[in-house]
Each structure stands twice: as structure tokens, then as C-alpha cells.
Image 1 (cartoon, rainbow, N blue to C red):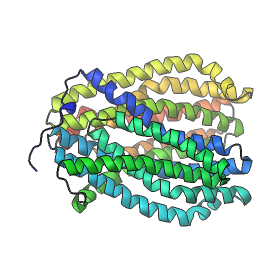
Image 2 (cartoon, rainbow, N blue to C red):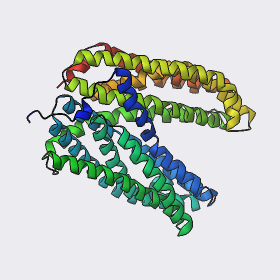
Image 3 (cartoon, rainbow, N blue to C red):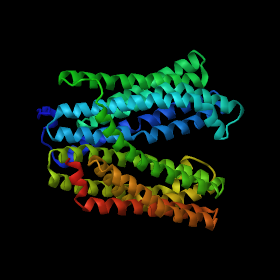
Image 4 (cartoon, rainbow, N blue to C red):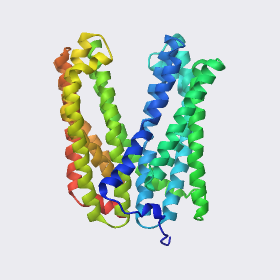
Length: 450
């Protein structure tokens, strides 16, 4: 395909810091859209009753797992589009985005059909009974149309990120969140649809968001003479990259799940404190993920433009930003740790255990900043296979650390501190080593320039 001029908006000169902020700040807002959807559902359903809230909580865990594994649709589309943009081939970039959208649609339909029929067996397998099982099944089934839309949103978001636009996804996410609340209140309380109304309202809001992305992809494709019909070779290529990224994500999910299994054996107090600590870790991760998304878009563009030296300099800048953010948040978290627990619970045992866990988490924040940024850099370079293999190796390192904590069988606050030392220091350090070794080589830049 011949070289096509890149839109002027993509060629405006800016310092590295300004470019990073321009992409990272809106990306942070868009990242929290899906958690906010689930939070809004829980808040609205919570007033219906305990069984309804428990059912939605259980169903949300299933949905969150499925959606988390499908995030590769954004992570594989972003670098493909960004590299084509950097090479001055806007038509190729839009074609890659179109193929990503088609892949999302096909996967979404298959998962939605399977999820509808498997809803009741799944929640039964997770131990739900009686009314809780009924409500969880209803919520899952009515959420399946929205699952298709959410996958389309991932792909559409990836297209715009590759085009160096993270502001539009923020606007779409904000509008979708507001629409979600209005629809849920109307369907749950106005029409008395109970938990089914909450799921249906969320699905409708997600389809409204997906429609915006589909309209943008269609208009850009028509403007540049790109067919809307899929290129099956392009979809297969996207699937290959996506499968490696899914394995990478799966390794992360397994690590988190294994951690929960071990802490469950330490008793209810440590489990409650761990849940609070993991919530704080996840929130801080959103901010670091925003930097990683900026890295995906910028690195992909630089390598697509055959500017490896610029990509190397940008990587160094991003590492400083990530580690620096980790130092700042670590210091603040360490200072606040003794008082954070009181915001969530009056149980002194949970507060004490949480304090120790947060001190360990604070110590690991600079490592987390380094890890998240390099993760984004290598995703932007299309180095998906290495990330998947490294994820498996990191699990192999983490497993004996977890086993040692489990065998020790300490149920006091010290036990939770040991668990978080294994996760926030041990597991994250293993990720830092595998990512750092790769980043210091030139192999990832060669892959990203193809």
C-alpha cells in the first residue's frame, strides 16, 4: 500500500513529557470505565437486598475474568495501528483497526452464546445456591449482549490509541457511565426488573459506546477508501498476536488467583485485609497502566517510523516516569498505611494486617512502576510472544514463594506481610528482571520495526 499523509494532528511537535501526559491522563479516565460500570451496578442493586447483591457480586467476578482476558483486543490493535501510522500508512492503520473490530465481534458472539447457556452451571460451580444462584444467573445472561459490545469497545479503543488519541475514549467512557446509571435506575426501580434490569441497562450503555466506535471506524474507512469487509489474513495475524497476549494476561490472573487461595487459608481477617490491599494495588495499577498505554502508542509509532533510537530514548523517559511515580506513591502510601484501614473497617485486626500489607506494597511501588511501563513498551513493539513466555517463567518463580508462605501457615498480620512480600516484591521483581533483560536488547525494536 502506498504511503499516505498522516493527519496534521498526529504530526504536531511536542516534548516527550507533553506527549506522554497527552496520552496517559485521558487513558487513566477511560481505564476505570468498566470497574465503574460494575461499581454502579453493585450500588444500585445493593438496595434490593442481600441475595441480589451477592448474586451480582458473583456474576461480576465471572464477567470481570472474561473481560480481563479479552483486553488483548485493545493491546494487539493499538501497536498494529500505531506502527502503520508511524510508517505514514494511514490506510494500513485503518485496515488493521477494522480487522481488530471484526475479531472482537466474532469472539464476542461466540462468548456471549456460550456464556448465556453456561451461566447457571458456572454460578453453581462457584457455590451459589437458592436465590443467589437465580440472581447471578439472571445477571450473567442479561449481561451477555453487553459482553459483545465491550469487546468491540476494546478494539475501537485500541484503534484510537494507535492513532494517538486517548481523549475520545475518555469522552465515550464518561458518557457511557452516565447513561449506565440512568438506565439502571429506570430499569431496576422504574420498571421493577430487579438484577436483570441492572444488567440490561449496562448492556444498553455498552452498546451505545460501541456504536460510537463503530461509526468512527466506518467513517474513517470510507474517507480513505478502505473496505469494511474483513481481511482474513489480517484477522489471523491479529489472532496470533492476541493469543500470546491472552497467555500473558492469563499468567497474571493465575498469579492473583493463587494469591487469594493462599490468603484464604490464613483466615477471614487476613482475607479481608488482603482484599482491601489488592483494591488499593489495583487502583494504583490503573495509573501505571495509563503510562503503559501511552508507551504502547508512542513506541509503536516510533518503531513504525523506523526511529529505533527515538524509541530507546522514549523508553528511558518512560522508565523514569514509571519508577518516579512508584517512589512518590510508595512514600505517600507508607505514610498513610496506619490510618487507611479505618476508612474501610472498624475491625482492629483487619486494620493491623492491612497496615503491614500496605507497607510492603509501598516498598514495591517503584518496581511496579518499572514493570508496568516496560510491559507497555514491549506490547507497543509487538513483542507478544516474549511477554507470554516471560509470564510463564515469572509464575514458575512465584509458585515456590507462595508455597513457602502457605506451608508456614502463619495466620497473623505477619502472615499477610509475608504473602505481600512474595507478591509485591518477589513476583514483581521476577517480572522486572524478565522485562528489563529484554528491554536492554535490540530484539524488541527489530520486531516492532517490521
